[in-house]
Length: 130
Image: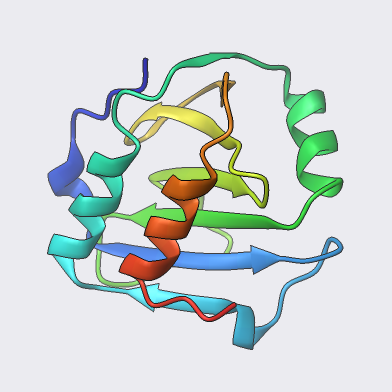
């Protein structure tokens, strides 16, 4: 079951959609609203997950359009620097978690079921048009 301890550490959220292995400026949104960021982290709490290999994670992400939710602790996301926390949502509503908590990379976890409605709610929360 997915739990995140240090929600208060999230200062910035970068949402990026990857289509056919690439992304673009118009498929990227930066969010600094702490309330929205904490709401997104609360939305993924309690999802049923199982372990998945890094290789299988890459295969699934390459086979689907993917939304990347990348959190950093400060007000800026430094490119090239490892994210504090991130999770990915495939277009079919599958969620992948390569971190157990802030600054804690792990063997990836994947949701057992798809959660299309949850992804739709997140897109609505952040007013994503992509």
